Length: 494
Ligand SMILES: *Cc1c(COP(=O)(O)O)cnc(C)c1O
Image (cartoon, rainbow, N blue to C red; front, side):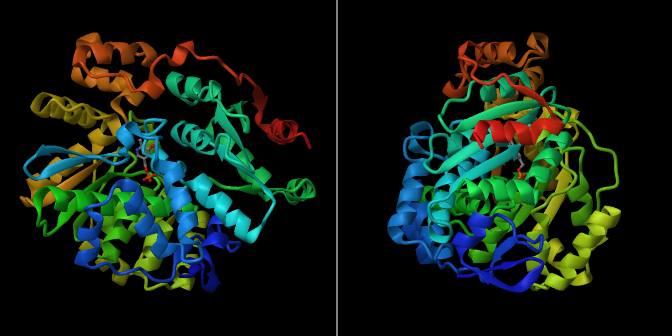
């Protein structure tokens, strides 16, 4: 299998090159040039396997330049002993036709772990093939979840170093503590004075500065990216949509089709579901759930992507996004791989913040996707109702998905088996979850709210989040956004 760029369909590289480089030089994203087609036997066979073996079976279809031994080393390294009960993506049944796919049993309690636990293995294996002996330096700007998950994934991984910048006042108390107390010999964390955009802009400047690249090269190093434009982050996400279907088969025998509901920000997670559908997983509707930043809801309805609108800070912060970068991969596919058309749309997006897709893509969107959104109050009401009805505690992002699914059922009467994707532990957003289930006990301090939430609901604080305030602080540096290069050189000792 080869990989093309969404902005140059004639470019053709191996998966190792696509993963090592992260993004194509023309600014496009790497996409597989064909979709493997799976038959019923494939799913039945996988339904008898554990998650690690299922992941191996899916990955080998896409990483044809990897050996089976290499793939096995990647999947075992990522998923053995790192998730609760060695079960990275369990299905929790809510009622006859609805279950919750819990993707937050990893080391940082958010679904980013599903991909960021394996990306370091995919990346180091790829780098050995295309740039042997080099030290890969991962640079991350984070608004919370990605930075911590990347740190946990890359800590003490051979031939890598990871540097994370976060806005000093832009992350939650718990998220800050998670990063300041990070362990590992190859990690560095620094707060910057400014907001997330300042951190992100600073990182992009360092990435594209040729003098910095030359200085790294002199020292046997090169930068790479751990965010969701990298194919190595998207591919592992296809696995759990296939795994969920295998679990449904194992549970129910015959399952004709299933809907998936995905709380969406950058469009990486739901795009993986679309790819699973293209491969033959019998997914009926892909239900895209947004918070008040509902640029995707409007896009699915009208075919117009327009980021010129107010930005809202919500209780589901990991979905507070107005540019969903992975959408480019979707419309490339729906256009029939027309990279010229996509380049035009993306030029429109950067010039005017806006583009409108053609009728062919609109028809494809309509056939596959349903969009919806939830306000903060609606999200809290959904968390409350789910807790009262099913004694199930959902986080704020999952709450958005539940509300949008309830609307969908009301509007359509569709009784198809449905998998609602749950992207974070409720304890990661404990202040808002506590307010939703028991407003009398609400407490705005996330650390205190964790303890109260545990008491009120009789559920356990996940180990990675308990005792956060008692761990040793290792990283207290704060720098101006203009001094980020100095901080990078200082840490790398160059
Ligand atoms: C990142 C994230 C999302 C959004 O996922 P995308 O792949 O960006 O659409 C949703 N929920 C949580 C908790 C996240 O961390």
